[in-house]
Picture 1 (cartoon, one colour):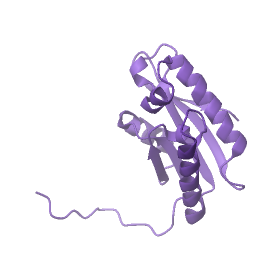
Picture 2 (tube, helix red, strand yellow; picture 1 turned 180 degrees about the horizontal axis):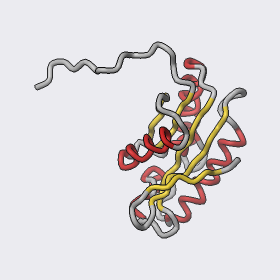
Picture 3 (cartoon, helix red, strand yellow; picture 1 turned 30 degrees about the vertical axis):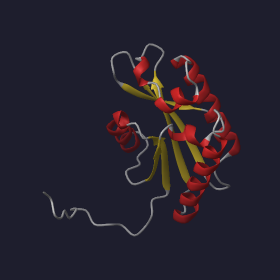
Length: 160
């Protein structure tokens, strides 16, 4: 049994300027980290990982208080850490991808809907968040992590 572990890397007092909002689905963790590091050049970032990811910030579905609460929490991080960029990562199957890659939170919010219907709702939610914004000086970048039929994850830009 481990009694203590000390990390090799020292703690940094400066907070990262980027917040990543993504689904807590661990099947995407390594691909998300690689995308952020290799494509966007982001290695240090605050994380806001919850079921549904950025969908938790949208007022779709039946639980309006959830979106309000999560937007409030997100706003707290943005203000407390001086965040100037937020990366929103939705996920699901590509057109030919496996249905099992669909976001479980969206399945819960929209029971009985197809993966294509869930994707349309994710796109509408992305548009809502882009329209509303998350703060006056916050740049939003929105992507959809799509699982292909071959099982690869590709990141596609949504919106602006």
